[in-house]
Amino acid sequence: MNRRGFLGVVGAGAAGVLAGCWPDARAFQAGDAPDVELALTARSGLCPLLPGAQTPVWQYSGRVLKGPREVLSTWPGSYLGPVLRLNKGQRVRVHFTNALAEPSIVHWHGLDVPDTADGHPRFMAQPGGQYTYDFTVENRAGSYWYHPHHHHRTGVQVYQGLAGLLLISDAEEQRLNLPAGARELFCVLQDRTFDAGNRLVYHADMGMAMGMGEMSGFFGTRLLVNGALPKTTDVATVPYRIRLLNGSNARVYKLAWSDGVPVTLIATDGGLLERPLTKPYLVLAPGERAEIIADFRRMPLGATRELRSEPIPSGPFLMNMGGRGRGRGRMTQAIPDLTGAVATFRVTAAEHSDFELPDRLTTFTSDWQTDAAMPPARVVGVDFMRMSWLLDGRVFGMTDVAAEETVVAGTKAVWEFDNSGASSMGMRLAHPLHLHGRQFRVLDRVRAPGVGAADNDRLRDGFTDEGWKDTVLVMPGERVRVLIRFSHHPGLYLYHCHNLEHEDMGMMRNYRIIPRPPI
Ligand code: C2O
Ligand code: CU
Ligand code: CU
Image 1 (tube, rainbow, N blue to C red):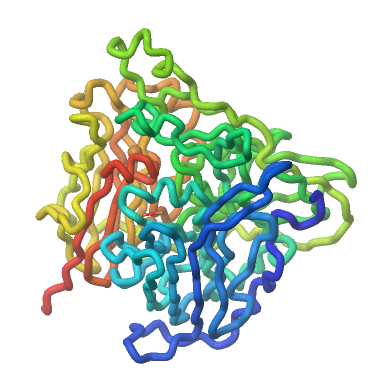
Image 2: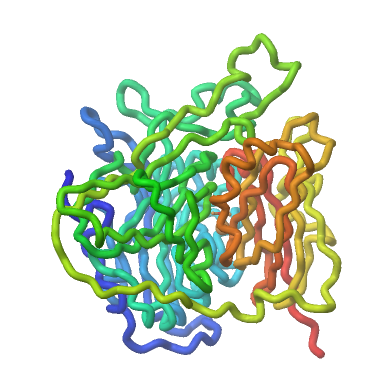
């Protein structure tokens, strides 16, 4: 399996192939013909992940009903769903069929779409049922993804294999001529635990009501990359674009090059940065994406280089009951260590490339700027009380919205995620907080003095706060302020912790966007 391009996908068209004619981004009205029409099905299957027996998984499969064939490409030997490639401005219709034995619904993570197309759990498709999505692609170019959003079962459904990449391109990105085709690679990071029969194990201790496992989230004992074991990829002496997604349930990764070269970051959750940045390492929390440029031009033929997963501290991620838990061994457990190569690149071909990464990639719109007259920040407390994870003191209710969770379409607001309060019996974990419907800007992080300082210092240089984000890792003791311009689509959207076990336990809330009143 060491063949070239494993980290790529078979059947993918070169970037730019979809560039044809772009419809204008007017609203997609019922009755309008879509530019792209897809069928997507979730069903159980078998995947050859480990030597020996195949692993039972759940997976998405797809078919293009209308539009260029290159919209959809499949991964060989992987449980991941097809990679979907869309262009800004396209009108898209997706017919989702649920062939699982339990309800499910698909969410397009990171996309700004009408609420009926967002995959809220109130729209769940029953077993054998269908759901049709209509939306116009309004997002800028970037690496987005799709996954189920069943309330209480998102964790297990993603764990069983339901996830896929959704890549958006636009004219601005295409002008940059970033490495494409065989020079575009993917790293979808997930951790899994297998039993002796190669079956996936999710929370062996699920029977124990409120075990520490559920409180912290699921941590697997094996690293999977692109829905398979990590591989060696043959590369040429040219630059590559690598799109990274942390599709794990709870695990945070710290990624660095084996030769100590800094990581060149060009894009985060919501697409390109204004300028490329270098970081000593990258920290990727569940739900987060990053795009990096890997330049193999100066490497000799035969040389190898690894993108490595570095050790992470357990403190911010594992529940610690302090004095109350002593004597119960499992409470002092560490996270199963997944240190090692995420991907190994072996230089096997001499090729030439003139590609120079421009020092200006894009210019952010005025959405990036704070307005002079903005209301004070809404503080969203992040707490653990009565054995529940809470946002602003509440757990999820299917259509529950509080007054402070009601916002006006197209307006700007600052929300402050406060993970520093003293009210949680000392139970402070890191939480990747995610907002549906919109990319936001991270304004600042303020750390309460002393709290988790040493652990925080081991990760903070890898945070990707410089780009458009839909998920931000809020560390213990931190208050993180984000600037949001809400979508122009009215409706009911979610914000939640993207630790999927926390989400399933109710660490999720709705917010409602009401139409802007006529002036
Ligand atoms: Cu990937 Cu509601 O999230
Ligand atoms: Cu989402
Ligand atoms: Cu959480």
